[in-house]
Length: 269
Image (cartoon, rainbow, N blue to C red):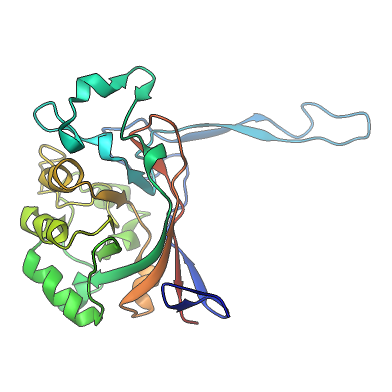
């Protein structure tokens, strides 16, 4: 019988943690919008045997839809992770170091910190700042300890709002997410990757937009922890489990600061 990280694969349930990608989906205004169009339709070219094919053109930013942030995505005072000068590793061709292609696929345990469950709600209110105390209490509630080198998924319930563009993006009322002290809590646990349901992972205050992103600085620049954003976690939360086997492999776009991903969670049936 096959096991990975203690998870029995046979008979397990697979849950897709990626939001469907479509033109007009919610995203940060900081990134190019996703667009997909059929470049060739059935019947535009018909082979001698009557066969035909359709194909599309896809235009997208690396940080649109469910995606992984590369360590080179954010800089602070001109420096990226490891103290490298951002100007020395970037060009019009992308990053020469710390691009998303350097992210080794993750297959392992992920702890699920269901913060809304602490308060008996399905989702956190707009602009709510998740604290270090929230994470400690959610860890105890999950019954699964956060371990070095592994993954943590922080729930806000926000993926339930995917079809409500203005609410999901927090253009007026903000978006819930971890604050700076929660980010330091995660960094102190020496996790490898963290994931969340919103487009910014961290708390966005009402009316502020992406004015500052301290959690990105603490995790990406200071601690070398990759971030997964816009995850579809609500189906996983409805299972009531405290941990899962997570499969995470973003597209290896050379030099890119981030790339789409289709994470999969494996839980007992």
